Amino acid sequence: MSRSNWRRSYTPLVTILLVLGDVLTLGISFATAYWFRFYSGVVEVVKGIPPADQYIWAFPIVVMVFLYVFKSAHLYRKRQGFSLFSEIGKVIRAVSIGFFILMALNFLYRGDVPFSRAFVLIAWAFSIFFLSINRGISNQFDLWLRKRKKQGIKVLIIGTGTAAQRLIRGIENNPRLDYEVLGVVATESVYETQFTGKEVVGTLNDFSEIVQKRGAEMAILTVPNIDHQKIVHLMLQCEKNMVQFQLVPDMFEILTTQFNITHINGIPLLGLKEIPLVNLWHRFQKRTFDIFSSLFGLVVASPVFLFAALWIKFDSKGPLFYSQERCGEDGTTFNLYKFRTMKEDAEAETGPVWAAEDDPRRTKSGEVLRRLNWDELPQLWNVFKGDMSLVGPRPERPHFVNQFKEDVPRYMSRHLVRSGMTGWAQVNGLRGNTDIRQRIEYDLFYMENWSLIFDVKIVLLTILRGTLNAY
Image (cartoon, rainbow, N blue to C red):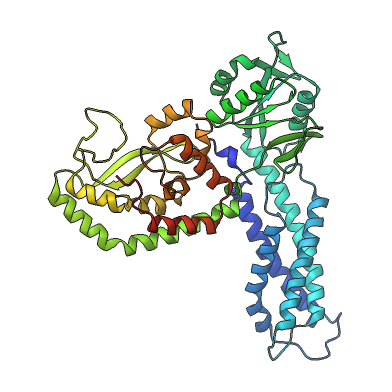
């Protein structure tokens, strides 16, 4: 089952429409301000009317400045418990900062015709007015979209106390919350079959079975004072099944610098901070980097493709490429491509096994291609298609994923992002048949500290350290 709801930062359609709406609204605001300043007759024109071309050519800069400021002000994040007055306050602050930057640029401008300062002030007022209207419209569209979809994040509530009762009512009374309560899990062996109108689906002893049977995507623990080991066990069970875990904290033990806190109906929910790639803007940056880098790589590596193809064909019988099923983002499978470096049906007798040093199944051409890492180059096509990223945790075969998720804590967390051709673990020598637990530590460090600069660093280190454990 796909767990894409785990990393949902904001409805992508609403975000895209909101950005396009802001650009259109800024255009309307500035056009209206230009007419009001120079043609309405309300404001006296003393120094003549400047050409409209000057303002039109400056508009792309205006858009870039405002979109950056709006993004920095978190105006494109998911809005739960939306308050229009709060949103308008954010718009006023963001617009004011944007115009402050524009005024600074205007001060540095040395054109023949300076921009009208009165125009800037009028445009500031119109921008606040029209952008606030745009936010109100997008708010109503978002609400309509959620009601029409009628399918939110599937949630299990753990506990049958007052906090659980308030939480359920808060979810039911707020249509903007993307939550659908599947049922309640009791913490005691004796319990009622119904709680606040929801079915009590079992106890903590049956938690793993309940999660799988009900298709839960999130579990919220409302009784934080239960045994610590039970909480850890619950978190690991959630991680194994790719279910988001949150809890209602003991207010005397909150460490706000370490956790992310949200509220529903006055009930605080405590969870681990989201990884950077939950953010839609960060995902856009990474995907853009992947598309251009993979396209560039395919063009530059085309002579290598031709050389490898000819050598493989003359060296041994079999296809040029080798396709293998791997587990990627959200645990979904895709076909990963490599140059064939082993004999045909190399695993016919052994089944899925790790490649080993001096592996007898390798062909002569394959030995060289693997040492140079050229066998991985066809994965640039996987990156371009969107199956993979240039940098990320290396994808594994379903056979090994099913094995590791039972034995290795937090193993499935690495599937919250796209798999990569290379990764932080690989450039530190953890390739192939190496300690899986240590590799997970490096993968999780990468996910929690992601940045575009970090990706570039890993790509450069891959080029410099490409032969580590490459057998």
